[in-house]
Length: 192
Image: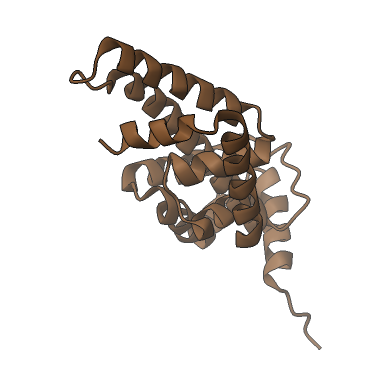
């Protein structure tokens, strides 16, 4: 009777061989997972070059840490989580860049007082968002600033869409409680 190996058994064997500097094992892992990892990244970022770089960096990291790599979950889950983390890191960098650009988008047609009030409101709103719990803040930023759907956020954060909705509701409630009427002014300025 021959023993049957499932994918997890095969991956475990590949990892052992990888730790022994087996380049064929590394190539096998790469060929097995790169398309799926790229698809995960691309489904969120929609940028071919950045997604290719993310996947390449993940595999470079696996090779560089092959001697000490300790995977407590399946190889597929480990690699997928690594990609999601890098995607989130890329989104965070883009959001930070947008905040800098946002300062440059003050409407020259508004009075200096209106532009100053708008900037103060943005600072106040950012302070409120920064005081949210980490998970709530991350979900809110992905929703409002990156304009991702609840489903996309659920995939990135590895949570249910209902949890995404709860975090967004909590964030909006905090903004409403702290800022109140000023949100109407903010919405007016951002719709111009």
